[in-house]
Length: 201
Image (cartoon, rainbow, N blue to C red; front, side, top):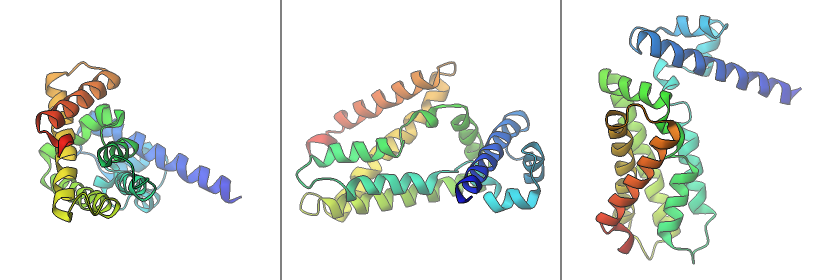
């Protein structure tokens, strides 16, 4: 029974996310209400708020899970591994530079961040939390290699490069497929890392 309930919860969650994406695309983030999203997903507003207490939660539905996945990569790594490979694996496993950052949902999120100060503030807070937690995990996994400050700088460089590349890709490659955009972002971040000599420090 618990399994069925969990499946129903996941279906409802996905329905709300799909309805939000469609309405954000049609009306814009600011003009869309939670009541409209609930109606489009065929649930009550009260149910919608149970899943997503604030409208901007629909723009960042997996933020906490992404951080957890990235941190777990450091907790499970072998101390003999190359720290840079672990960092890349951690960010890749959390899909920090993943395809979903280059799909239609990403475009809608970027538009909301650009146009809505509250969403922009939320995005900055989430980014800061991710950098802090991942930087701490990097330091704890390799304390002799990176000080807390060095780990924070390195993590920020990776995440900052990815964020900037994703944002720029929408202007430079407006008609790209998600896979093409993902590839362009990954290549750009790799080039930035090499140019900054990050991997050799």
